[in-house]
Amino acid sequence: MKTTGIVRKIDELGRIVIPKELRGVLGIKPGDNLSFLVDEERIILEKYEIMDNLKDKSSHIISSVNDLVDASIFISDNEKFLTKGILEGKKLPPLFQELLVARKNYVSKQVEKIAFGDEVLEGYFLAKCLIKDSNPLGILLLYKRSILLEEDDFFAKIVKNIIENS
Image (cartoon, rainbow, N blue to C red; front, top):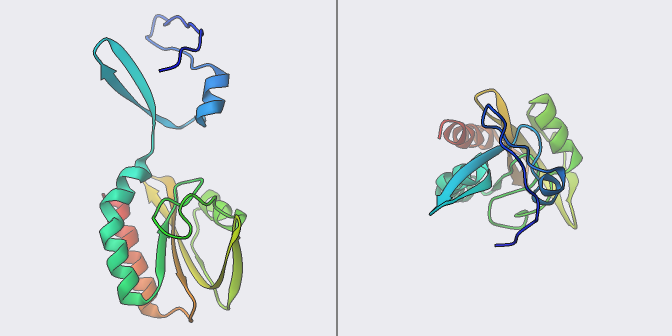
């Protein structure tokens, strides 16, 4: 464990300010959740990612649906894709960031090329905004090389429902 040399007082309400430098290094923004861990006489704060827990719970469902609809389903948090595969760790393209802010879904009407960092996918995209307790959690993205069918939307809705209700 590294020491930072930064010391802060706890105020009368038990609050402490996390220094801006540390928040920047750790990617902690206003509204982020932190979890408290206790290790003997130490308190450890960790950035808590709701989507990490949901990703683990839904990974087997996603792989089953991928096989059924001959498509690839990816889940992101508000910044990057979390599910294993070609998009894992890739940042959300601007289109999907806008969907999250607007809390809207998206369906390709024709073949599109979308860049996910250095990875470019060409095909049809169905994106659903994942929302829990009225907070946008991320995006459920169904990607397919062939035209989207009604069953693709049906399966995406099922996975979305499972994730949001986990």
